[in-house]
Length: 304
Image (cartoon, rainbow, N blue to C red; front, side):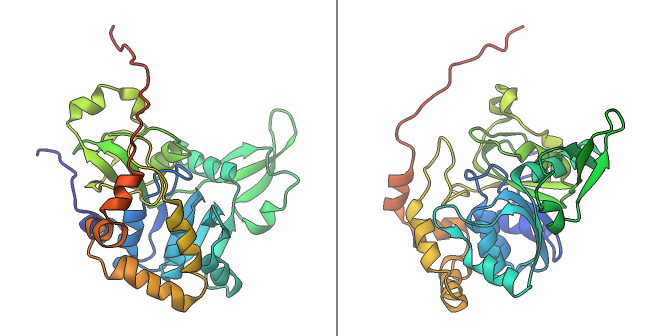
């Protein structure tokens, strides 16, 4: 197909994620977390990565446990059900990784600043907190219009954004719905964008509803057809969150030895996402998690 950006997930990760790459992901908060891409990064043994995001759930913890990570710029790293991630906690305490602490709002502003092409954006929200003691990207400035003290949030410009979406065409135009979080800001701030998509659809499907296109297709570098690519996180309209997986991960990450066994079984000893879903998840679990009660929006009229 002319202009096609379709890649296998393995090839996309190999081409755009190098040792030392800075990656923004998990941008829709608890939904559409690109677990398939994260597991492929682990499988390819990428190292010295910088991870950027808001609430990352367990994916950042898994990447830290796999020793892929050098630096984190995030609001929180852990297991939303059970608390702080064990791998992350151990890595911070041993000073194996460097952490730049953010709130969900400051990470959004940092990416928005980069998307706008400016060096910082002002806010009042961090004044009075101690975030600036743990983040050199937060400064105080005087407003030139009012003379008020403001916090300045320095820009963050990731090398790559990895985003999971419900559907995309082969040229990189995509629909994402549900919680968007800071996905738009992250994509427009990044040099390259890798999409993993539940479905690959004709371009006419995407252009029929332009309001669900949150970043332009020409900014996308790779599109990877990856059904169940967000599992175990939920993907609105496709499948629910697998709460058991998160609870089991807590038990399987308590020590480095137990985590290594988990990683071998769930990541290193499977070929790809399809193999993972067959071997680890199984058809019965997939059937249970698949959305059965549809809730459609009211149609809109784009006529003019």
